[in-house]
Image (tube, rainbow, N blue to C red):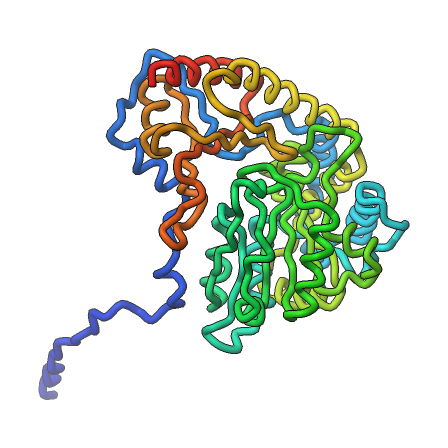
Length: 419
């Protein structure tokens, strides 16, 4: 039998071109904490003083025992697939909480049609743009405040829309200047993000301002997404911040049309690792978002739902939490008042002071001289018409326990006195 003929060897030539991908990926900017790591990489890695990190908005107070206990007791839920829509008990508890918190009639927010549990507001704030931006043209605009939470920008870019940064003047508390928005821009808007209390300034949109925003949305046909994850961190117990659903209801918009709010247990209940929040509002939008999430595969695990029920039912731990933050703000303001102008926020857990030097250099100086890490303000904003509203400001997160915050304030004071 003759030997088999050798198989000819052909050199395969593969294209070296990169694969085609979502073009929005190339427009994503580094996340603020990547930029912070780059900023400090040539600074000394050791220091005589212990490090104090006030750069990231991660609550450090203990997660309430009732939340931990409910989570552990429900671990058998890992044996079942959860429904994307969430368990009826969780949606009912959220509806009850919204009614109590925002002065709404019982079941005004229908737990069957108007509430959807989500795995933290970060995930939902991103996903909502993917679901609701119409992609009708490259001129679709998603509006957002400036300074802002960077997820808004990334969500717009990856949904194929143009992120547009609304002016938020310092003399208006870094809240959006709605009157400055051109009609032509608003006509292109499909989705507008607002944040109240705001990140990083902690300013609060009044009920009247929220009503005016909804009227603007009607005139120009866009959806308002209100990021209210800091809504339970406020300092006047007699005046909790209003919310978008509250403004809608009290202005006669009982169907909450064009309205979506997002709330989270991360800040309210010191449970950032639980990854638990919810979206509520317009039932048409909720139905569309539910359909999107059914394909997206982002149902909340059953044991997390059980822990969330326990958290939303209880207010005592939230009142205690506010008292801890109130004490830290008071202590830091007393130490810094004569060397650093401070405006105490109406909500949230950030200080947003302005410094007499560039924020990048000030951040480096505090790390080098005091081993205190903060976040440069310009990392939280974008430059528009040559102006970055975060320049010369630092975001200081009062998340550490009070002794650490007090120590940080003394170190910052020492540095400021040498400028």
